[in-house]
Length: 168
Image (cartoon, rainbow, N blue to C red; front, side, top):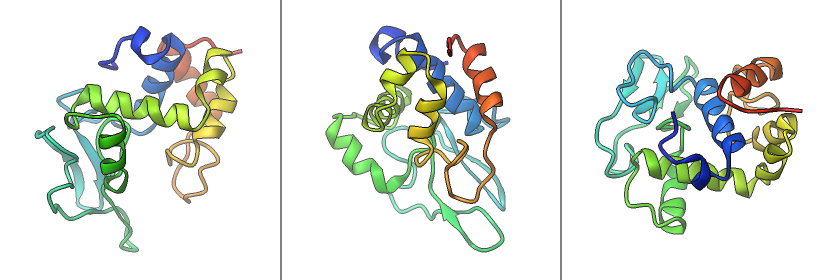
């Protein structure tokens, strides 16, 4: 479950979307997580990875990115919402995040939803629009264009509902 409260997140619809994202990204149900996905690093060709130090993004101190496919593609996506290192300094400073802990990851996720103008569609129950507006951020969402596996809208809708969301 998200660490941030429903009120602080902007409502139950927003929290349900965040829960849906964690399921879609494979972090909250990862067999290696000890912290509901907040400690998961992108899975690589060498297996699954986790981190325990939440003081900063796990790749901020020079850790090499993870090789994620046989073509040599690498990633440093980390945490419940698979935040990228390249974005960490900007959001850390913008949101005055004290660390890469669960509450900071939740706040960053909400900021991304705001920037993609996904909050109002969520509040209106328009899950499809919210997903479409965020597809360029999360590779697990349909329409992402990254050439990676995507979840079907019906699967995401079921997860959203299971986590307390109310779509139209």
